[in-house]
Length: 216
Figure 1 (cartoon, helix red, strand yellow):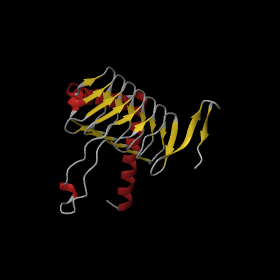
Figure 2 (figure 1 turned 135 degrees about the vertical axis):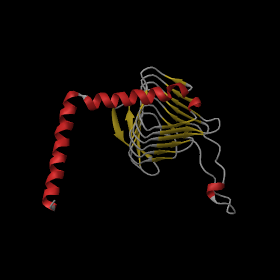
Figure 3 (figure 1 turned 120 degrees about the horizontal axis):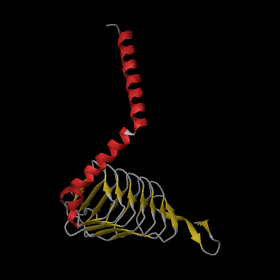
Figure 4 (figure 1 turned 90 degrees about the horizontal axis):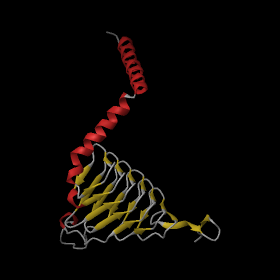
């Protein structure tokens, strides 16, 4: 079989798959299949949590460690690829109505508390502890973890893509963390922060009834 014929056959196959996929989408097959996978993934893990609320879901390919110290409220959705873990006596609480995007990692040695109706984008990292590094006689990987400092994310916050939130941080109610920010200190309520390290760039003004820029 010649090269041109092989290429033509591949194109025919590709077009055929595209047509079949389009027809299946019209019938809702992919949607129903995806929903079935989510239901099965949730059923496989929900009983291992300390509490797992009504209408909440854990999507396929999530990694959950120390689930007996993780509390999940009602209507919470944890999307695929997330890694949520507790160390030692660490605890994680996720409030009602919160959506956690794809490939987020939450890791707690003390506590991570997430309020209600919080929106997570994808690829977010939140930790309440660090790794020791100061002993020059020992490789860092063999040094102990630091003591946890609780992290709190209050209700209605929005955490942008690729954000890192460090130990001891409190993110105030209805605040926004801009994409790729590294949050090293607490964020006031009704604020927008951005940058490395994150700083306040906007705040809501009750006096002006509007969001106003914050100048250096």
